[in-house]
Image (cartoon, rainbow, N blue to C red):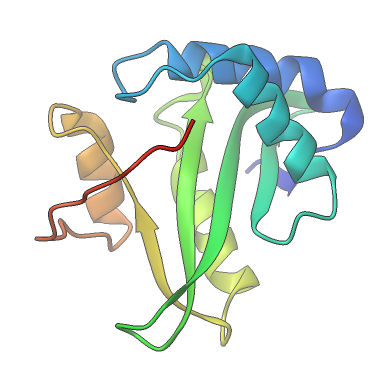
Length: 149
């Protein structure tokens, strides 16, 4: 059983290190710059209402991190929680920490959120199976984006 808590200022460097590993991996298509990663953490630490950052602690050691964004879904008529990042250090994988995080989110947003979303690379079979075990399913939508910076 791990502890899930909001990111604190003293976690900054360790979370940044994990983000660098995550964003350099095949799990993401876009390799974010360090400037963007630092801004992400700063936004989690600020009063920015659209992003929350979490760390997972196992016996006092940081085992991973997650960031979730909040938005509105007109299709389902309510708050949508988008799991933007979910990363566990290799030595903490396959211990159920991701499942614990999903249960934590569902409890935290019970009666508030109507939908949870995340992205996963098609080739990431391990992650896909883990997400399916937690009730997520493949969405038939084809996503389109436009970046302004």
